[in-house]
Image (cartoon, rainbow, N blue to C red; front, side):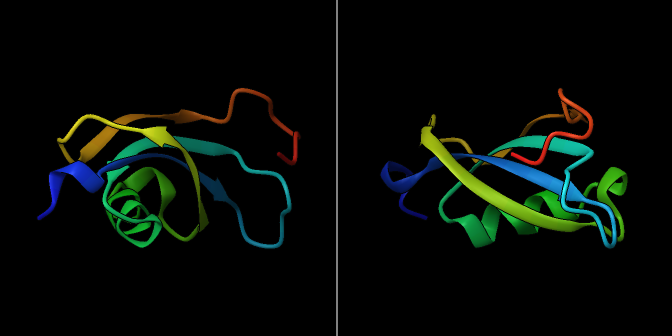
Amino acid sequence: MNTTAMRFYGVKGFPEDTDAPTMVLQVRARSPERAIELAAARPMVAGMRLEAVDIGCGLPVEGVYYEGSWPWPGRKK
């Protein structure tokens, strides 16, 4: 794995048929797809549609660093 390519992503979890996320995870990964893969392994987002947003550079260590409720319930972005 190329650790210099690691990025920091916010992965938002959307319940079925909803445009507003209810969960958010902070993930360091090499791609948005890998960030979603790591987030999808968490029970708290089971059955949710996941969306990764690149929010900057990250440390060269892959993993999930935060998982919890979306800070602004009902907010779309």
